[in-house]
Length: 184
Image (cartoon, rainbow, N blue to C red; front, side, top):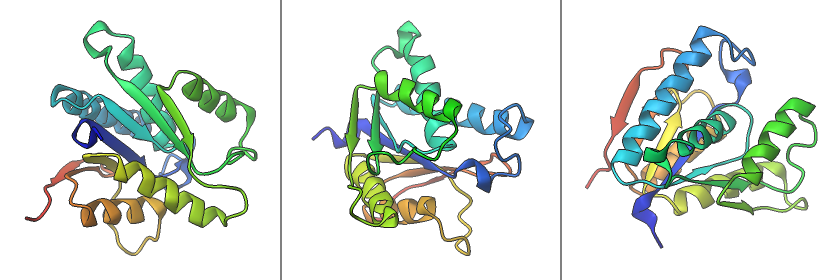
């Protein structure tokens, strides 16, 4: 397994952000720029595979940023990999979002469906998140470390900590960067 060369990306859905679904908002633009900057740094450190989870918000933004970077010759080795929680997870999305996700899937190096419709959605989302972390040597998360908010992103960050992954956190409101090294 090429664990050391893969990075998992996780983060909140748009409803968690102050700007909600307004991607023209300066706060959203700032978050996207931080994601892009961190992905470039990781690429320069040797990461080539990037797992995203197929959700609205950070997952979609990171996937789109990775595909745009991949178009540039200096980032041509980027491999976008997508882990979906279950088939039809995007059924209730509006058309534009479904179309954007479909584009990412068509242009990904690999797309896997981790869960199944028979299992409760929460179980499938957790399985998807753990699947990505289990295949990664690094986690990039848009997350504020506020433990009072129960979220899939928080559970993913905690799972990565348990697995001993180094983590870069981008704060969802301030867009500040903090890095965590695993405790040895």
